[in-house]
Amino acid sequence: MRRYTEEQEGWLRANYGRGTVRDTLDAFEARFGWRPSSGALYQKAHKMRLEKAVGEADRAARAQVRMRWSSPECAEMREWMLENDSTEGVQATIDAFEARFGIRLCRSQVTLFRSSHGTQKRSPRRPAEGLPVGTERKGRGGLVKVKVKAHPDVPCSKDNWRYKHHLAWEEANGRPVPEGCAIVFADGDPGNCDPGNLVAVPKRYAGQLNNPRLPGYGDAETLRACVALADLRSAVGAAEKGSPRRCGVCGATFTPTEKQRGYRRGVQTCPACLAAGRHAPGVRDGGEDGTCSVCGATYRKSIRTQTRCPGCIAAAREASARRKRKKEDGR
Ligand SMILES: [Zn+2]
Ligand SMILES: [Zn+2]
Image (spheres, rainbow, N blue to C red):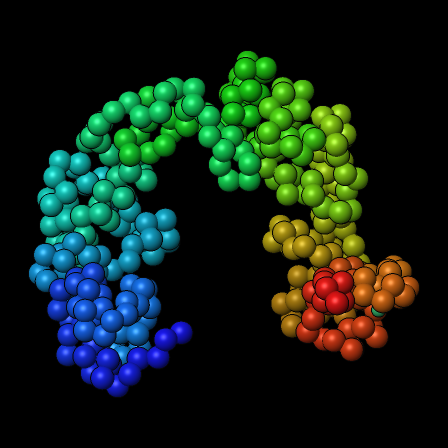
């Protein structure tokens, strides 16, 4: 990092407010013979508590309040927008919104609301067709998207691009991807869109598929078996959570309430005792033997997710086993 001299700091104090960032950079370079990056200059100015003077036009273009339309606090405003945003003029909506809620939105907040809620009516400029329909492009995680239409249905969205594996699954099965399902690559290769490699998995189980306590999968058959197992386990879990049991405090038999069934761990105290402020001591599940991931010793787990022996935990409370192993391998 380059140090700014007192002279340079003084110059910034006197001149930073004027013009655009680029103007300042140019002037700075002309004066001192070196050019900081725009980010570095901004950081420096920020530390010196300097700001660019903002013109009236700029101020109107900037958001005054951050709007998170999906948050519960914004629910009322969101409803209002859905009902009253006429999609005629952005300015009319800005004025009406301010009259109703006292918050002045900026133009991009209104247009962003429209495009994210599918209410954008104004068709975007269509300069050219862009990429031809059928173009493929690799996206996040190696997943391939295909351009299926020249233009999106919802203006300013990208709904004319679809996942290649979704299309392949739909073609093979003759129906759209079921609601709430993910299409999983059975062999784990996001480039393999062969219909035999694609399985629709309810999203509530998709996360469990990588659970090390489930047997792994490598093809469509084993993947389906894994999904069936996850399904079974969740049914067993639900039944167990709702089964009658003895209260650990008063000894009475009780059936867990709806709310108690939602808890991750087994409930051992009846609602009456809970209301009186008493809790059964509870049993921490664990109890099985584990192999320490750091030193390899066998130890008795005190909780299920424990990965290190008590000795290693005492030796390095903070470092996770994985980090520690990495460190040792690195040496
Ligand atoms: Zn009780
Ligand atoms: Zn150990």
